[in-house]
Amino acid sequence: MNDVKQFIESGILEMYVLGQTTAEENSEVERMAVMYNEVHREIDDISITLEKYARAHAVTPDPTIHPFLMAMIDYTERIKKGEAPAFPPTLHGGSKIADYAEWLTRKDLEPAEPLTDMYASIIGYTPEVTTAIVWLKEGAPAETHTDELEKFLIVEGTCDITIGEEVHSLQPGNVLIIPLHLPHSVKVTSEYPCKIILQRAAA
Image (tube, rainbow, N blue to C red; front, side, top):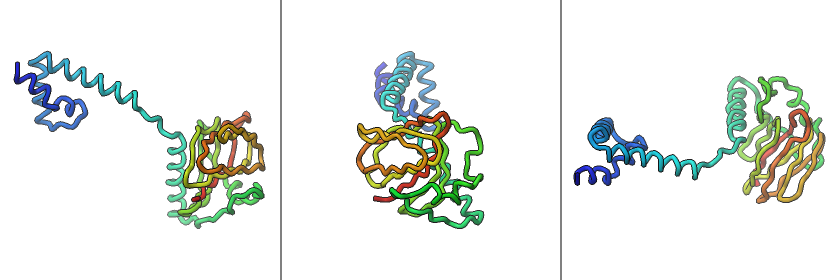
């Protein structure tokens, strides 16, 4: 019985549950689990404890990461196929929708499928500035930037952008620059997706 206790306390069962044991060690753990109920129960207890821990400390991924990752892959592929790198105008308080007309009229930059939540097409990239056309169906969760300025130019639809406690209701043609270190979120208020020129510039 001491051998079973030592086996349980050795740490191999935790490694087994985490998938960090060798094939030979797996065979030994499974043999012991068949022979001794204590080992089988301990494996179950470890599995339940680890699952509870994982659920308690789970981090919800930022839903904007995937659309922008896919947009960067698409932009890279377009450049490889011969599209010339572009340098869209810097977004500022006096920017107009017409400043970005050459990209806004391109059908190949639009969502290919019905929009589920968010879609992005990068139209210009340098290490200092990324410019994209973004479609939002419902909005974007709160985030805070510490090293880049995020700028919005509304092209179609309407939205509320909340910065800290202040709500900015925006419509086509409006520009908003998000200050550093303040949480902000976007809520679409139109019945159709909000189309935005989004620019992120290193601060």
